[in-house]
Length: 293
Ligand SMILES: Nc1nc2c(ncn2[C@@H]2O[C@H](COP(=O)(O)OP(=O)(O)O)[C@@H](O)[C@H]2O)c(=O)[nH]1
Ligand SMILES: [Mg+2]
Ligand SMILES: [Zn+2]
Image 1 (cartoon, rainbow, N blue to C red):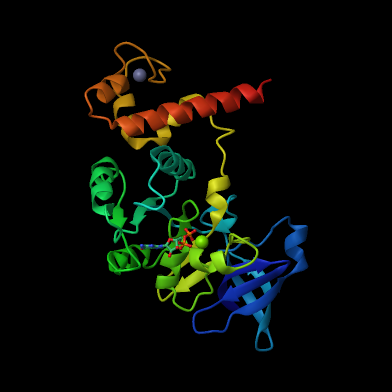
Image 2: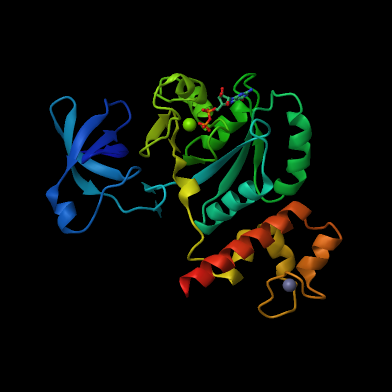
């Protein structure tokens, strides 16, 4: 038996990669179904070979982590991709995605793309002081190759998931990092007849030293089962001041003497981050109200 990793799953077939081997199309042993186990993209497995190109998955290794959306196992970190311009950064979208990743307790690296565009530097300069105290922040361009080496360093030895809205440049980055990957970027999809390309299944791409998964799954995540009081924990910078807030159960909205509110008023806490916090809090409260009516 050999050890490999599931890089793709399509209608009951699992594609298993092992370094130096051709990717094998595998079936899973029936016994998994009996045990209620479903192999996931990202799983490490033991498989036996059937001829040159096929195999059978015999064993699943225990998972270090498991995401439901996207359904991927053993992710080490999320690369949150946003473009500096075209489309411009929307603070709330950005902060909501960060919150979503925090919710899944995954380390996060921010990658701001399209740094070659005119005016991108100014946008980067406004974002950097807000986010760099919390997360590594890189800026990249696939046009000039700027920042790509730093990104490669961050990906080395890890399994990374790319998350971000459509059009920000995820596929273009992936294409750069994995030149022989079959990736569709915006330009190609414009030409295709079926309109905008959407990745239908998660797929792992292998680097010399690491794996990447490109999937739209993250944006489907919902906050429907989050409690309002938990929302602050998804904003690291809000949390710094929330810990000093003396009011029990405070949600740091309008209370007189609230430390978060004060930090916002004195600009110690970024106004856009505070606004995003309030807006997400509002959404979560509405989700909750709907749950009980
Ligand atoms: N100027 C510039 N355009 C880029 C860059 N990266 C991607 N794009 C363009 O942005 C559009 C969307 O890119 P794509 O990779 O398909 O985004 P995805 O939807 O996140 O996968 C395409 O037209 C790309 O050519 C970049 O670094 N600089
Ligand atoms: Mg894409
Ligand atoms: Zn408070």
